[in-house]
Image (cartoon, rainbow, N blue to C red; front, side, top):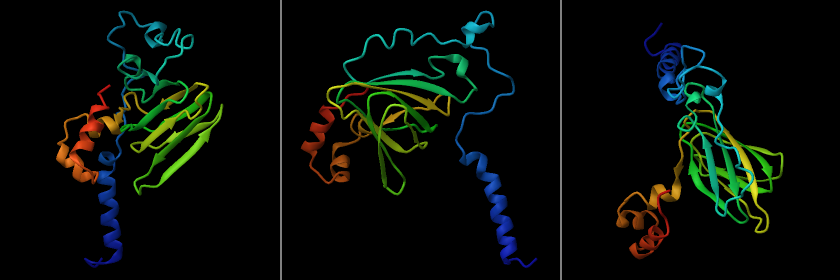
Length: 207
């Protein structure tokens, strides 16, 4: 086979792709057992695999947007299972600000109310949809997305599933304006003045 033949080049590219593919796919590691026993379980029974932290959640609706997470941090039995959960409560007119989940896609199921949702892809194309009760929407892994209850009279409630036991959340406003990035850098990046940046920073606090 000639050193520069198309077939040789194709083989080399294929070998390279196979070599780097495990590093390129960020996901939860596989485990070598049925499950990992949570450290807080003194004896292994059904209680080890039960999460009770959402009892009473639906009896009192919050006044601000609230996320109740069920990730590995809250429910250790999820360790190694590549799944997690969240209940999202949106009072009338409230928003879940633009954010990302670096380690998982999100599958959102609307239980009550209506929601305007959307995400932006790596070509800066915005995809939006207004969801009604029973609709499901997927937010691709790592992409900036949001949800907005545009109805100013009625609340909305959704349940989200994630393809990771620890999906992670990075808030765009907090990451940009509440982490100590220099005012001059932000002013240049947003093509504005330092005074405007200071006003934006003053209105944003870390969660």
